[in-house]
Length: 399
Image (tube, rainbow, N blue to C red; front, side, top):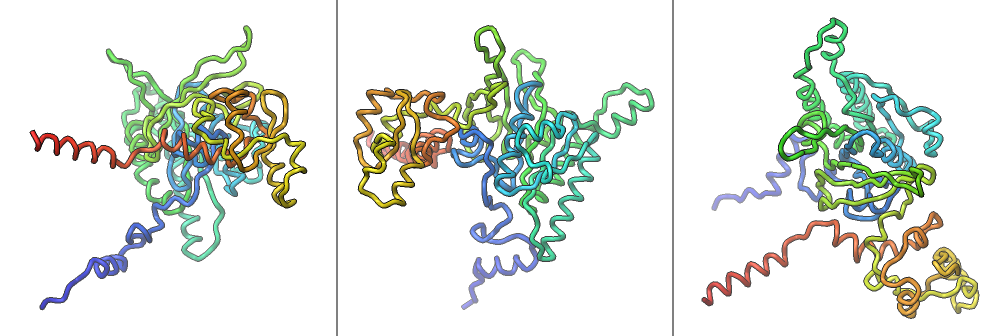
């Protein structure tokens, strides 16, 4: 009887000749270790399917849109959150839109932010390839390397070397090689960034195509379109307070997303107040199904009367918030909250009143994530459809 050559033996043999290949449960090459927040919970959900997600740590994400839609603003917000999670930033700037004053206003640590002015696609390719090679060489030597995030603002403003050479020689011919150069760049970067566990966040410009049906496309050809795991198209409307322009209302529409259903969202970027972390969530909060009522609302002044340990009282203090009636409440574990919620707040919550910078209790966000956000933003796995098809087949057979 012939000896069986198993898949396990085949996998082991192949692994001798492969640097990263293995069964998917053991492979670390494409594994996402963490997500980097964006500064807004709903935007996190739009990108990754969870309020507590955001930018995957070894993938590429593109914010694309016309001028003034908040691309650089969102990018700087991501950088701020990334630094909180221990990342050092390599920032390539082709638009000269960022300086030390801007960095300080966003609360970004300038000592952990390397600034690289960049004019051409070739300059960017050379610099980022050197960066990746340095990181990977140190990793192979067993060194503990810093967590790095690479940012580019913007791809759309990078010239090709041919464009510059033609301009210097007085030629006004359009560069037909630019898209090919960008596509080549992204083919090179793809696996290298994944190997290095380096997230890459970049901005790009969008253009309206000239046709009977207007089509919005991002610049750079098919390179960034195929390469990026997430492409978020942005457009804006003016936010007014009285007759004054107070900010912009951004509509973010995923043009491509490998992590969540392409679900459009809206949020506000206020000129004076910035972007509230909770803005947009009011559309997904239903107090009846969010089950905030897993806890009972009590007056914060009554926390000391609770027959619990001092440690539990400290936890209760962390849940204190100011409700629309102006009173401070905290949560304890029982069901009396429903009547108060229905009477005081109705079925929905005003984000401006309750979702403030003081923070909404994290356990409520977890509940909201499970009950409302994940079902709204994540793909189904098809069980219900399979059952439906089976029932149709059975009914046809009976006929």
